[in-house]
Image (cartoon, rainbow, N blue to C red; front, side):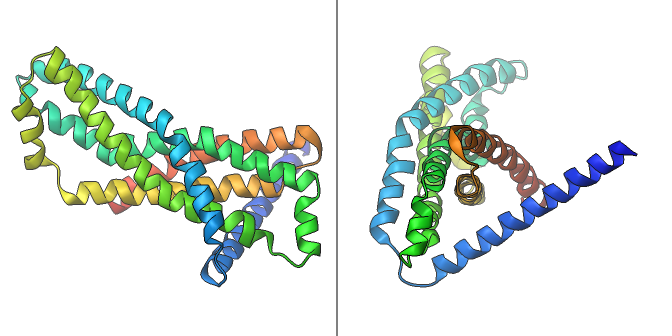
Length: 255
């Protein structure tokens, strides 16, 4: 019966963590909906999450578009449909790859730093000092990260999509001979505003997931360097898995 006890212990621990994460998110939303809002802290997070992630987003988007252009050309060439290379690359990036890969890149670059920053503040008792001074750590630490991620992720996704589309044209148009008018002209026939809004909505949700999970793991980090490193690893893994899971849920149920 030992395995039943272990299974029950794991189940109860998981449910307890899920409840704590839900309460953490609820308190964050309450602080976000009530004044005062720390705009200077929000701008700092937009700079950190958004601007400082542009290089990795630019490179990832360019190479993703180039790979799509290369693979898509040879796949469509089998059916004599190379004229549809532009819509294929655009729809793949706008609907799926743009939001998902942007979310994963931001998780690895900014989300891990978020967790480490808050975790170090936790183990060095800086958060406890803020509470003793009557300051709400959610208002100063968590809410700016949530709002900053919600603003930055759609903008980064848009940059990813644009760079990826031009990367696909660089390979498909300049290297493999697909006409510029054909590549970009067919997009107007197949890419709709609903597709763009779908990608924007997904990126908004991913911004919430990244800031929520990474902030929670840092806020509840254990003591010492080992506790912070463990929390950072858990935050990146859980955020990445939830991004992929929620992408599937939204694609299958909402779109």
